[in-house]
Length: 415
Length: 211
Image (cartoon, rainbow over all chains, first blue to last red; front, side):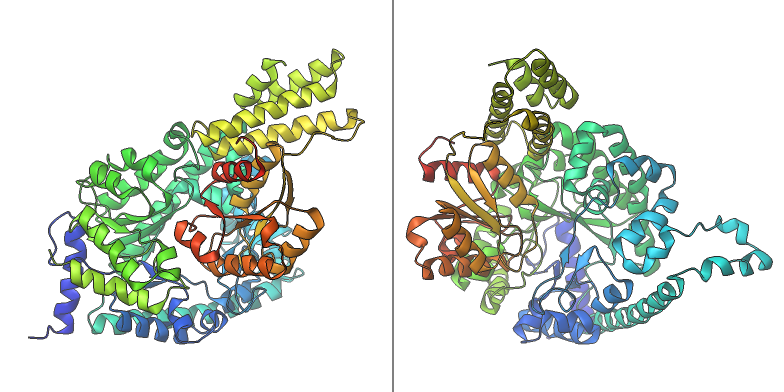
């Protein structure tokens, strides 16, 4: 008998949860963590078009999910172009902005907090972010760099609020609020499209992967504030200040995840990770600068009933000894590159294995190669496994290779 | 050769290394000799990176210390830098990709290891690689990329080098997080690597020297 959408939904949730909890699932599922531009590329639609039109993007996401047999509604990893334009975003470049229509969006890494500004940030993270970081990352916030607003509580009465006139009439302020209004309009469309997509998918039996997103505190500092070069030099020149920035960002990351999960009554959180991989630092540096705040984030999720879904980008083989100490059956660990056999040996009784099919195979290989790779994964991992590539579905994947992922999961994944 | 300076650099003692440099210059030592010691430390750092004894932070910090030492020494060195180069390398991030962190680490390590490196930057068109190979007489070309779109860009670039009749005179290496043997074969490169140590080993192999 064909299962109803409600039964399908429940089966898929159960399957994912069983695998994370290290119980035996009924089968190994194909659950891509996320997609960027694969759905539009195979439909002959430009990256710029879906970056600008949320409803078109989610329509194509739905088509791809159904066509390729994903077992949940893969999440979206594309920042909205109109919002970026409205904010005059400088920390991102996007197709239809100053990148070609078929380019992917890309991050602009820089020292958005300079080495000699760290003390100012630590003394007043909110004020520094408003006056200095926001104007650096988005053009419309330029007026905030020179307007000396009074503290908010000074304004908590009608007379003082009206006396904001000198501030609000300053050069650039009207343009800033107009930009914010345009941003709000696009944000409403974005939320409507997202809500519609996940709602429709749930109605036909496809769960939503996650709502909450949080970053390891080191990555927040390194990726967003100080850059790889800056945070690296901080390790040697001002290690205590680097640790102090990490201490500021850890509760922010935890609260973002818990807040999003509570507000949406969901229990999974995506944690993309960048700078803790092998090669990026020694064990000693990892133990000092990365692991304490990362493990605190993981434990905070678990204590709040949230399943953390860390995406271990880069080669995590050298870090398996740390991952092995995490609580068993609580973490949905998604891998980019890692030694499969070493993982099984060191972490196989601690966490499930998700991802790791190389993008090179999906973009340039054959369906037979893809199926062989999935079979090898299943041979090593058994049924504590979820099929996916390294960071979701690569944009340039050959459609027949994505179908091969699904076919391999169905063919070899019922143990 | 003094080991004091190399020891300070390898210990990431920035202030100590700069003080030693100043003291040696004040004592009348030739700046070229001091520079040789500093370069020797950077070569050792590269060797340690290849053996996974040090990692990217030490390479970046070592490069920063070296920059400070060079700034101190360069005004005092009157002769041109006539040290014989180990080989000529053209390197850049392929078109469509604007990532530079990995490329920059590779460039730095190749430079401190004695190669003449021409860094073409990011999002480099095929024709710029071709022009740079011609202009500099490169023996090795390095193509970097972080995105999966780089697979095709690397292929295009190598085909462009071939179409320009230059493929016979250069070896091409590719690198970046998603690059592997499969991509190497697809793009038609001569070799691939995941990090700066691999790039150094390939360059040494192709220019007839030790890594």
